[in-house]
Length: 182
Image (cartoon, rainbow, N blue to C red):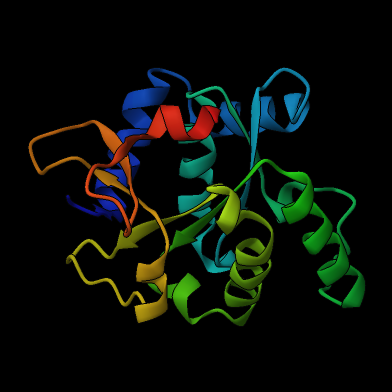
């Protein structure tokens, strides 16, 4: 197994997108959210990782998945407040899956850790939560010990472009597309 670096994730998103750019996928995702997609995902992320979030939207959209990103939601308050927290909690519950885009910034974010707690409560026991660890391009990832409790989205090996969900309590991983469609 091999975790993504930010550069390898960007390459995977570009490879999946073909000639479409991130903005085209963002606009498409915004228009079709939950209307034509079979699975919806709440994407927990650090707001400082906006470029990576755009890549994640592209990456998952090419797999036929609808991605919810709070700053793409026009109904969210401009400044975070109690209503923001309630809406985020509702969105985590309403979406089929929860994925933490676990960059070093997200691991340090109190919002991401709070969202992971809500996701754990609502999705973990149902097999609908995963962590997508993203190391810096130097290969450094500051993932906390508790993140290792959760299924991880990673390459099958360093020579493979296939993506798998590695469950900490199972010997064999699950193909990412299979996990997403459950």
